[in-house]
Each structure stands twice: as C-alpha cells, then as structure tokens.
Length: 322
Length: 241
Image 1 (spheres, rainbow over the protein chains, first blue to last red):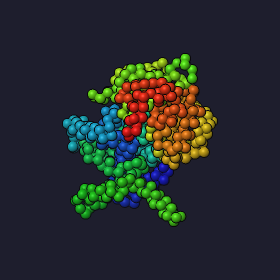
Image 2 (image 1 turned 60 degrees about the horizontal axis):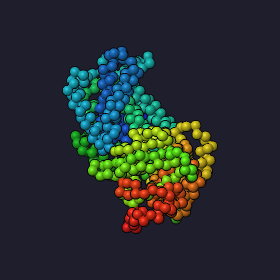
Image 3 (image 1 turned 180 degrees about the vertical axis):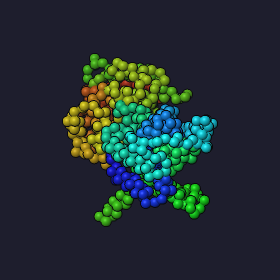
Image 4 (image 1 turned 90 degrees about the horizontal axis):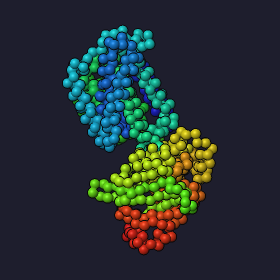
C-alpha cells in the first residue's frame, strides 16, 4: 500500500529545508546539511524496527561504519564521491549483515539487548583501535578534489552537500514509495506482521528479515558517508550508543511505523536543540520533557496524526448522521 | 474411500518433550491422499504440539514426519509448504491492510496460477464480490473461508485444518462443513483438529483420539465416538469444562 501523502509530506519538508538553506547563513546551512545525513539514520532505524522486526539499538554503529569507510577510502579513490558513497553503503550493509545474523534468532526484546551489547562492544573496540578510528579525537577527511561524475563538489557543511544529501534522500523516499506498491513489499509486510503465517505460505521469513535489515544498514551507511563528507571529520562518538538512541528518538517523534516520519523527527528535535541552546544549557532536559509529551500524547509520532485526524473526522461524521 | 490408496502424509513414532514434560509420546498415524482424518482430544491432549510438529514449528524429539514419501522431519515450515503441505490456523491469521486479492496473490507465491482459476476459486467460496476489500472488514466466517482458499489455491498434497470452525456462528459452521465436503472430501489428504463433534462426524472419514500426548484410539467416527473410553476421556473432560 503506497503512502502517497507521506511521500508528499516528506518531500515537501525536504524541499523546504533546501529553500530555507538558501535564505539563512552558513551556520544554519551546515546544521541542515547534517540533519539531512541523520535523516538516513532515522529512516534506517524505522526500516529495521518496523519491517525487519529488529529493534536495533546499534544503528549508529552501522552509520559510523559508513562514515569511517569514506574517511578510509577517500585517499585511495581520489575524491570520487560516487565510489566513496558506494563504499559507505557496502560497509553499512556488511556490518548490518553481521549484526543481523547474530540477533535475528533472538526474541524481540532479546534482539534489542543484543544490539545494545554490539553497540557498546564496537564503541569500545573503536576507542581501543585509535590508529584506525582516531578514538575520541577522530580522523579528518583527506583533502582531495572531490567530484561527482566529473562535477566538482566541495566537501563540508555547505549548500552543495546539503543538496546532494537531499537529492539522494528524495530518490530513496520515492524508491520506497514505488517498492511499497509492489508484490515484494507485500511479502515483507506479511513477514513483519506474522512470520509464521508467511512461512506457512512458503516464504523464508528469516531471509526476508535479514535482507531488509541489510538494506537498512546500507541506508544508514550512506547517511554515515554523507555525514563524513559534510563534517570532514569522524570521531568515535559517531558510532556510540547515545547516537543510536537519538536515531530512535527521531524515528519515534516522526512516526515509528512510517519511514516518511524520519525527516520530520530529525528536523523537529535537532532544530529545537539548536534554538534552545541559545537560551539555556538545559537543552537535554527540555528535549527529554518534549519526548515524554510525545510518548504520552502522540505515541504514533507526527505521521500518526493523520490516522488520528481521520478517525476524529469519521467519528464526527458518524455523530452528525445519528 | 479407497482402502488401497497410499498415505500422502504420516507421522511415525513421534514424541516431543519440553524439559521433563512429555507433550507427545510415540504418536503414529497416516492420512491417505483422499482421506479426511480428525484429531480430537481433551485440553492438554497434545493437539497443539501435534499441529506444530506437522507444520514444522517444532522438531520432534523422536520419530519421523513423512509427506508423499519424503522425510520432512527437519524441514522448516516454508520448505514443507513448497513441498505441498498447507495449513490454516485456529485463529484467523490474515494480514492487516491487505485485500482478499492481495492475500491470494501472496498464497500463490508469484506462480503462474491462472488468474481465472483464482477468481473461480474465490467465486465458489463466495468471496469474489469482496476481492478488493480489506480483510479486516470481513466477517469472522469469511476470514476463515479466505484462509481456506489461500491453503487450497496451489492444490496442496496435504492440508492441515486447525479448528476450522472455531468462533463461527451456526450458519458459518454449516457453510464451512459444506465447503469441506464439496471441495476437499475425496480430493486431498486432510487432518482436521477440531473440538466440535458435529463437524467431526459430518466431515471426517477417520478419527484419532489423543489423550495425555498419546493415541488413545482410532477408527471411523461412528465407532470411535461410541467408544466408552472416548466418552470418558473426551466428552467427560469437555463436560467438565
């Protein structure tokens, strides 16, 4: 079932973000460019949680794998952004494949705990392998003449990188909209809703879940690759548990059951954080309270408002008829 | 029924233990390719464990499961389905937000099953008028009938019906009994796990009674249901509930 309204809402928000970036200063353009890279992370969590049935608390590790892949690959592939992003997707997909194979046979809550252990373990390993990751100081992106299919691109928190991220995200969202109307996506939904029922119909539920989780890893990896290009620097905190928790919050605020909710959640939380930082240092407390409010009064996130409004409208119509 | 036709499905000496608890002990039975066998028994008799072993959810601790001559004991549910074992569930297990037509499309697994044949099957089962309706808007009876259509569409070798009339009204139960009689009887090997004795007597060629995880007795419905042991085991226990 294609969610055309969801697609239009998310693409409109993306377009508004790009237009806004042309009107505001360099700082905010950089903030928005990073936000777009995190949108990939939020979408990847939703995909893992809602379609692979893996409540992955290690999505930032997968995101970080993509980011480090770009840092490591940059000198070897002479600034070819297409190849760098391909490397980031492969790295994200490969890490997700390993994580998926480890946690897939666990129960739902078991998988959540399993991914927490993996996230912490990889964070500690990253901290220990300073030569490879740069530890808390991180590693800078090598200075190269970056180009995308021959078109020169300046890496960094600028409008060019914001547009590149937004275009890739728009393609991803439109691609998801297309796939969600196809038979293959009905199988994915069937597996997600009732794995045993799908198995009895002849579908290999485990294979479908792992495939979706790997795709979510590729998306997180791509976001990580873009993040490395925007930030020109990646530190070990990028793959930490707190980053993974943020991805869950973004997805929850946007609407955990819709991948179109991710962009809304990222913008709502990150922009609120940036604005609040100008007046108070207790940003985390305020964001935390906002999230409690969302959990209490908006459990389906912003995208869930549509269903709620539709229900209200139908109740009012029914009341008028009677 | 032909007494000489070969068994399409059998379990041989199947036992299943969960820790120290023996849910099934040395259960053996077979179903011919044109036979309907009912499995009955009081609560705790091991029926659900038996269903899960037949469909591949559980692997037996001992014994073999045979489908059309092939040992499928270790195979997962999807491989059994692809070899021709279909099943329905005790509680209608349909997918939210999908139509009847989409369910049928899932059931054929992208095979070139003639679209006309699919429509005809839905027509014969009284569902074609609702083909584009979300399954959540269907009555409970129609949901169970759809499950049956999904199980039958690929013409399975063997069909496992887990309480096909559970939760149905009298009219819906009669409809299901007619459907089983018209569409399945003499055409495919079937095991029906059922509580409703009138369904058992109207649909089944053979009855196997499970009690405390073992086969208590087997035979034709009229003989088995008159057996004093069965009355004590099954009807006595049912009356107690």
